[in-house]
Length: 309
Image (cartoon, rainbow, N blue to C red; front, side, top):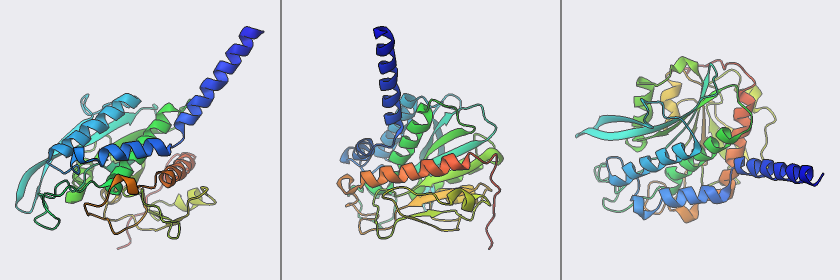
């Protein structure tokens, strides 16, 4: 009897610990942002050492979580692009896969790059100053890693696969998503939808969080119906197009959701630093995303609605 009780208690503790680990965690979110937005990474600029270091960090986290590398055994998808007088600028996407043996796949995306020391921006931003980009977009990367942790550590098998993509070169014109949609590692027609997080770390309770792409699939209104998350207010926008990486998936025929807490005085300035992150609210936003993702999986497929213009 004692042995049975010990086994039962141990199993309950183990189950409780696993459940706790899958819940978006504010302290863990803050820790990820603290690193990605530290002066050590010098703003994660494209074609700068800090940006490359950030990509390696993301790949390391993917491997640690147990995501598969699907690009010829590499987590990296390297590419180059041109911007104005700058030619053959190097960047890379970081890609990890959760294979549930399903026919369709959900894409979770966020860009990891920021302005760096602004060398490639032709004087638009103060050159030489570190732009740490805590909200833009270390916050989105923390959200991506929390979602990866949640879905890979669940004890049940979801009816969809998950593809996690950390995009490079977003600040240079959505270059990472542009490259991926032109060179997808899996057919875009087999994608259930793409969820994008860009600046989700400065929640304003008066505004709430905006969720774009509400009009990009016929099923979104039903999926959103009656969804609530304590402490998080949200509103929807029908547009699938926009100034972040979901845009390239939408114009390629993939339904999208885009999460964004709105602009602020630190946007694209050296003052966008980690201590200003609202990690507890971000954890609530990620939990809201989990609700919507889970509800979307009740549908075998979403029906894409294209732009009206």
